[in-house]
Image (cartoon, rainbow, N blue to C red):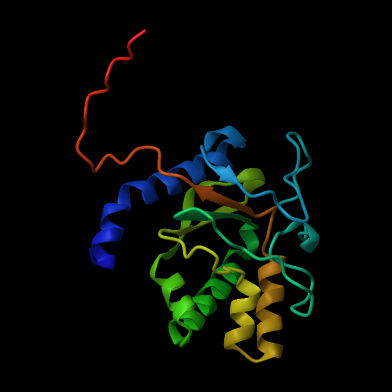
Length: 206
């Protein structure tokens, strides 16, 4: 089956992932997404009722994938499931900065000659939620369907591969400053595919 057909076959699962991710952050209920979440490192989500800090500079140590510099060892952003998602709550006044960095990531992947990077680009889409995120932030949802299992999706590493160190560092700092809270990585398992023929459930025999 061609890659295009596979992507169409998975469309239902990808849309479900995006909708579930939006609900997850809009409601603040971690149970809203039926997925296995990778434990954030090194930060953790703020507890319910925490003060509104959307307008304050984000703490880089609370954002998985990043340190304060590209010279800092970066935690890998890897997926074990066929579909993955990364939820990024972005400060409303930093949306343009974040979108600029995402555009440069797009450029980097498009120009890459690395087979793994090109494969990652094939299944990587970034969505912006129409609904407001937590504490007035803007929620961006990166969906990897299919994900490239074992491949690193860390933005800092992609920037370093594509651009001179000084330019990559500047973009990296813009990326850091845009966050309103902790980034979340999800490994998503398919629960139901509505594109497939329906079959009646077999009654259990007691």
